[in-house]
Image (cartoon, rainbow, N blue to C red):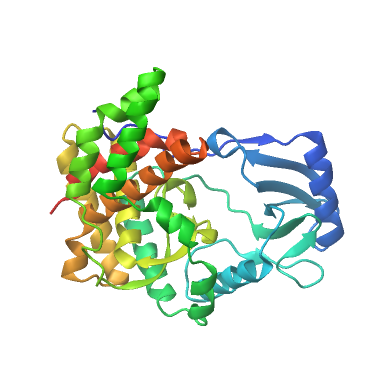
Length: 362
């Protein structure tokens, strides 16, 4: 198995492409009617190309008094929980006051941060001319320091209990993320049954990894670190949720990914994603040494802002594996039992994440 290969989060340069005419017209109307202080006219509306083309984040080029300005417009889907979004925005204001680099929310003419233009919700943010995390060591140092500051601030978040309830995973999600030898025995039995009736390349690939997955489960007993500190964390801090200038952090993105979990789960997840991108970017001759060096840079910078316990530091590989197994279980259960292939493409990535966790053992 080849590891530390580029994946869907490895492209660091952000390219934009124009939206369809109908989308442009609708979003132009929303902006001009609700953000007239920002714009007399809308010159263009673009989306990120590549893997994020289906995102609901739009780069808006607006004209005001003959000068062009740039903004990020966020469109929320139907059925939006406005109280949850407002709580997240309250957390973002707190983080901004604490000196964290995140996009600033811009109020509409009404004074509201979130507006509803049926059936969608909209919010406007400052636009930062930057790219995603590239993978240089100085980027890791900058991001990790900000991440430590983020966790420090989130542990002191006002009204945290209200947000904690709003961001809790439904019981069904916890159940579908659950893994054990017994659960995966049932999964493999089901796949073997399918293979007896129809030859399928994906099913055969999964069966070929049976011993590998069982071995990972044995190394990752559920509840092994239940006593570690828990708090609200950014649960998805990967290269595409970061903006940098190639050296320093410009902003942390996607605060809809706040969740209540072990602090070290978030640290391990982020460290792995950033370090693996460092390996992809630098293509070192000795991957083991490169991972060790980048991991040291990350932890040193993080702990200048937020100290970790010795037990947490010893749990890095465990949480990388645990989260990968949880996400792998979600992918396969959705596919087998719900015929939902939305995350099927995540299969290879999670298998690689499990294997790469070995590089992060102390």
